[in-house]
Image (cartoon, rainbow over all chains, first blue to last red; front, side, top):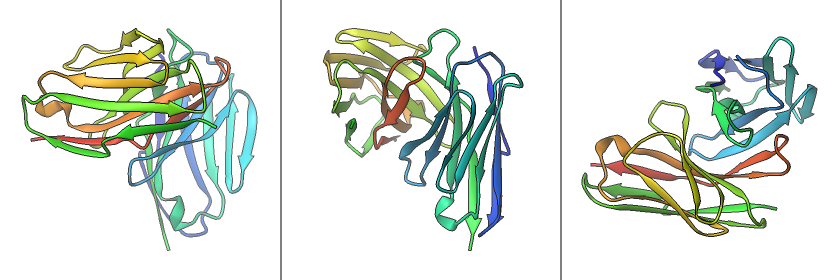
Length: 110
Length: 114
């Protein structure tokens, strides 16, 4: 089983701050997913990346395959970014199933 | 683009009662479908997945079962609910070529067992 660890578990920031959320995993993977869960429970996929860096608006995701580590960055954070951010990697036994981190609860205060 | 529908959105059921949650998808054919559960304050747990009609794999032994009677329909059921079945249930599908696929999630059903 591929273990996924996220840090921090909880993060509180002031509006405008630069945010970093980290994810480490234990087994080699082909791709890593970053998900966002809104307060109401809905989940959206932010990124799926297998190498390097991807950027979408104020969100940036990076991955280092050799070090088995990924980071999600939020620039110029805003209260609407408040959500749970979840890292997930393919299950060792089947690439179509995901193993999830416990999530990082981000709160951005105005 | 893929769309996932789930109903009901919320449900309050007594212990020992049956359960049926339905998930239907649009905009894709022969998808891999998944049922996840999220207990309060916990991470996502995969319950069942299906690669085709009538094909169900269970990840953890539990009080629940799943069925896929049609290509775009995935049902989660229980004959007798337990308090521990309370949680947020999400249906999801994998789109695109494995392993470089995207996962799409439905809006979820919040189940409270009383």
